[in-house]
Image 1 (cartoon, rainbow, N blue to C red):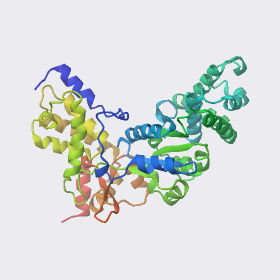
Image 2: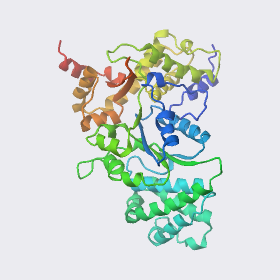
Image 3: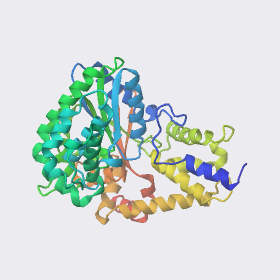
Image 4: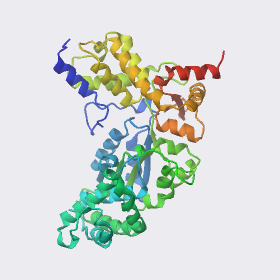
Length: 443
């Protein structure tokens, strides 16, 4: 087996856990059959295509589960079905997940639509809105320039500069919101005039306009003065504004918001939210699930085959049992799977990967989870492991958000979708968790 440094470097990078796969990527693996048989192309895509009204849909799941990859598939599917799709990852240039509010999302959508549709619609309504606010905003754009003296492209650039400050300049973030918040209704009105013009002038191949705002699920929950979280304020209190754009909308949301005391409100406002659960590598009775393990193995093999079609993922490890251990320790969480693999390769000088290198990568990630859990959370985690269910409580929602608790789904023999939960497998090896479980089950 090839063992030089150049090969190990290629192997290390092919397991990059932070790069979503574009549509049609050869490394993509369809895992729907071990994820409860949910398909984003059906659950969200067909809703857009067959609905006579404008839709606003939510897409949820654990961070790192593969939502961005699925959304890029959705973008490709809708494009081929005659939809002009504006996709953007909100946390890259538009919002700061550690401090985000509704206004940030509205400005992000405005910026992205303006940039994507400037050649298909007259941007005047939005630029006129900006001119009306310019006296209040131009100092925040760090410029003395007058918009009237700028060409359209330069005016759009100034708008982008202001919205980018929401992410990069904490000291300006509050000031921008303070000056924009009283005018969000007029911004939406101007945006809808722009959208209507764009829809009337899109190329004939397109019959619908769709916005996909990705990575909003990364917005960190922050408790507000009224005892509720910023998630409630954004996705519930501001739901009418989120839904008010005159085009189809898809927003990613934190999975934890689906398990609050406002869960029925979420359903009433947005309809059924599609969730991307974990790949089921274990059954609810703690037995290995071979179909799921095979799928996780396929995820690894597809990446390996991008380097060498003749290599088998089984032979990359010094012991066959190590591959199954890796699959199980990932919990079916794709990012954790790739991260564990990548770290094991980093700890390897020559192939095959020794057991010690894999165990070291597992131990390092386990320590990360240990540091994530507070002292009062070990007992609730033990209860989840014991019951495979969660309580509707802020503590459990936090553990879902932090991926200490993972959600799984399967379809039973009668065709019913069954949802269950488990503690991340890495946590099960932590002494504090084991002590809590023994206290719960002293026998």
